[in-house]
Image (cartoon, rainbow, N blue to C red; front, side):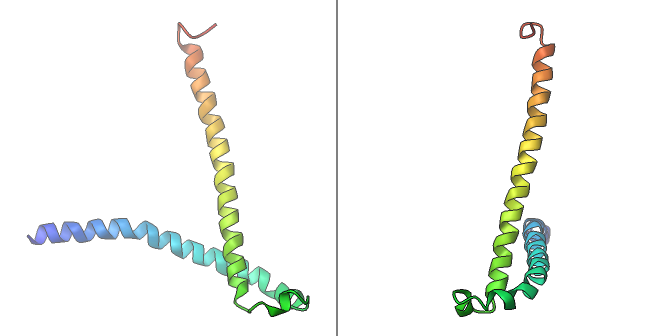
Length: 101
């Protein structure tokens, strides 16, 4: 019984750890982006439309920038990996006796 309990706890930790690491990395990225955006905020808040925005909107904007950057990175990676995979498949099909020219 104790072995089953230990196995379930370890399984739970193994499932939870990638989620915690992902959230921590996202937190760090948002803090870094906020550090770059923060000096610009006083200049933006002088514009009449933006003067009504709360100060914490910097972190929201940083989060949006981080999500868009991660999405863009995923698009680039999937296109590069996808293109490499298609080249590999083309080589495999060209070596096949019935499919080659």
